[in-house]
Length: 54
Ligand SMILES: [Zn+2]
Image 1 (tube, helix red, strand yellow):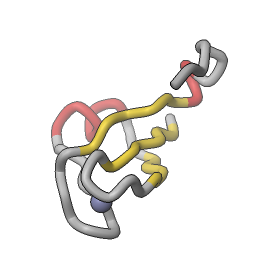
Image 2 (cartoon, rainbow, N blue to C red):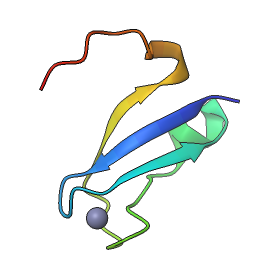
Image 3 (cartoon, protein in one colour):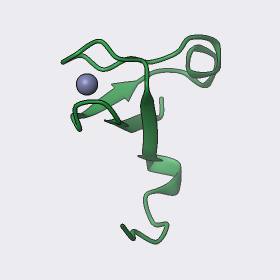
Image 4 (tube, rainbow, N blue to C red):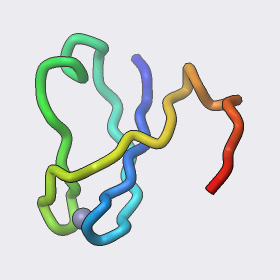
């Protein structure tokens, strides 16, 4: 099962979510810290080797 890393654009919290592709597609993840749904996926295990630039 893939693991996703998200960054909350509101508070800057990083959090990991492990879920199936179907679940990932179906529901929106939200920040566990502030509850904002304004989150951005950083990378998953599938894309762990992509270039990291700020
Ligand atoms: Zn947050």
